[in-house]
Amino acid sequence: MLWPFELHRSYHRRNDIHARFGGQQQGGISTPADAPGIFIFTGHGAGHVGYQDVFEADGSFRYTGQGQLGDMRMISGNRAIRDHVQNGKDLLLFQQTKKGGPVRFEGLYVCGGWEMEQQPDMNGQPRQAIVFTLVPQNGLSVEAEDLAAGAPPDLPLAELRKRAFQAALASNEASPRVALASVMARSKAVRDYVLARAAGLCEACRNPAPFLTRTGRPYLEAHHIHKMSDGGPDHPASIAALCPNCHREAHFGKDQLTLKSELLEWVRKIEI
Ligand SMILES: [Zn+2]
Ligand SMILES: [Zn+2]
Image 1 (cartoon, helix red, strand yellow):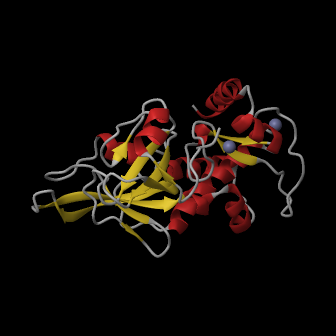
Image 2 (image 1 turned 90 degrees about the horizontal axis):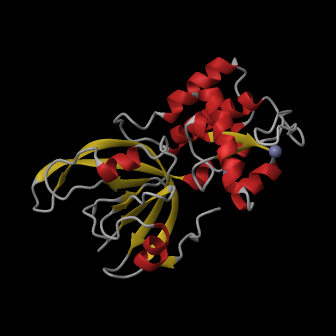
Image 3 (image 1 turned 60 degrees about the horizontal axis):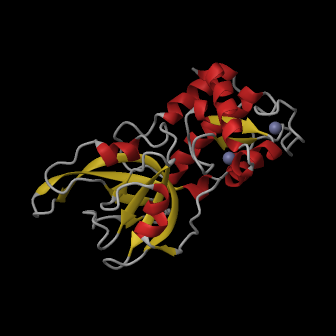
């Protein structure tokens, strides 16, 4: 399955988002318990204090976290954004342009990092706010990575694995502004490792990759087992290397839940 939202299309927040997937109907950060995503709302009237939210030139988005008064803390919605990669959740960004109006889907994002910044609270008092750098996931798609990535580094599997685990946890610590490029590098580190781990065999059907790429690598695709979307960094125990057939089946097949639990069992045996 994939998310049923089209880029830049407008949706009714309650009917189209929460009625279908759950999550808090008010506030800037909505964390449904049973859906593999976190809904983020920005803009006028979205019940969100972040009037300082801003899109940067490289397409990344500075998003002010949750908390109306006093210093913000890394709890609830803020924590959910910070930890979304390791929790297997997608970040879906919606913008409200008019109070009470529809929300526009701005796409899938990845939390690249966060920092504390002085901003006024609801009463105009200065306080420390959590500001996330969210980078657009479309710059991190499998195709974009293949074009940009070139050959994987020629390193032992253990070293690739170490880099992948570091990449998966990189957004936990506060850090100054993070660029799209560094999140792409994290994403590539996880992907390089998972493809090396698979050693040319699909991790679902165990058949050899259907062809070699121009750089001579067995062609397999990185699939995020929990998330509905692919692309972006993830925990190596949540990604499988699949042949194109098994990959389509994982998203669209009638037995996708069975396939999902088999994949989880397989990667957990290796990684945990
Ligand atoms: Zn397969
Ligand atoms: Zn996939």
